[in-house]
Amino acid sequence: MKIRALAIVVLALVALGSPIGSQEADELHFREIKLLIFDEKWAEALGRLDDFLARFPSSPSTGQALYYKGKCLDHLAGRERAAMEAYQTYLRRGDKNKSLAESAEIAVIDLALKLAAKGDRSYLPDVVERLESPDKNVRDYAAIQLSYAKERRDAERSIPGLKRILREETNPEVRDRAKIALARLAPKELEEEMEEPAFSRKQMLHFQIVDRRTGKNVFALNIPWILGDLAFSAISADDRASLRAKGYDLDKILKELKSGKGTILEVDDEDSGKTFRIWLK
Image 1 (cartoon, rainbow, N blue to C red):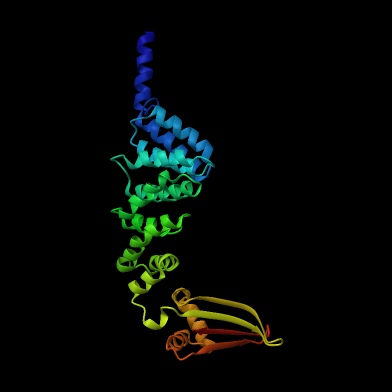
Image 2 (cartoon, rainbow, N blue to C red):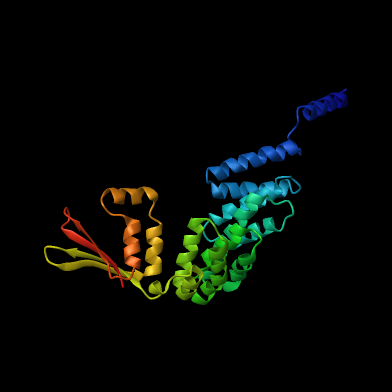
């Protein structure tokens, strides 16, 4: 009788979807972990993830668990190498989610450069190999981020990727980031890619603020024209319209500056008693 009663209990648990050893159990467990991650409770989530991976090694959520393990480790100080290992393990799986895989690739780039900046150059190949990634977003990100590497010899390895962005990319924000990076590393190659006219090759854009009361400069800045042009191009359409309403047509001003006629733009600010000057030479 006792055996029969026990059997009835077991069957009832099965019918109710008993969590013990079932797929429902690992799904519930994993949902709880993701809540911890969304709340940015990284250390607690990491402990739960390790437990999950040990208890449910064949779960459909195992791949995601490895990705999120990397994410948790990435947010814990001094755990960069462990985070790299978790992300790499996830990326070697055959059941990767496209969005999570791209996020993991980008995280690997950031971690590798962070470790390299701390003196461990053994991770740099993880960045360099992603310069040829089949994922355009990953290879563009690798090129732009590598351009900021601590060692110039490493940063210069990004130049071919930066030039490719200028030839192929249509997103203006990504193009501008590539231009700025290339301007730092190889301005002549940027000029060639952009087919800049001769006037700009060695031109400098000058900014000057003069105190009209004393006649003295209170601020001066000289930058290569190519960087100044990028700064001007980043001004939004609304801001350009606002400037036009005040009598300053930015497009006309830039045209005059680039004409090579020595135009100096002067703006007097009555409130501050300062004069702002911009010219190209």
